[in-house]
Length: 74
Image (tube, rainbow, N blue to C red; front, side, top):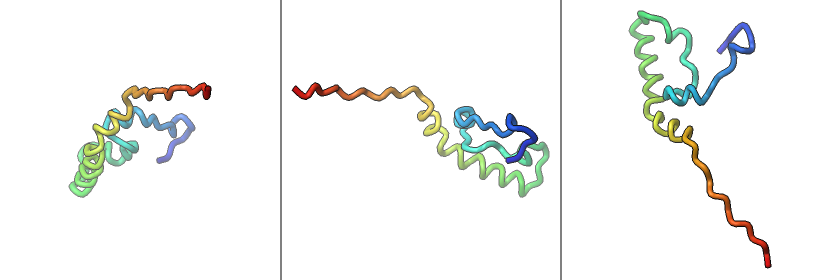
């Protein structure tokens, strides 16, 4: 990744997880009319995220842990 300013380097991982991604889509993959080799690489890259998409969404759910009972030691 590269950018011209700090703001361009900020990655919102929760937004990526909602899309089923773990890393931002490379700029070259965002172009229209990709050559065959690039289309294949893009599909393989997206497929890796699809298999984990439900796990990423589940991790984003508000999961509150039960607090352990406080022992008074009496």
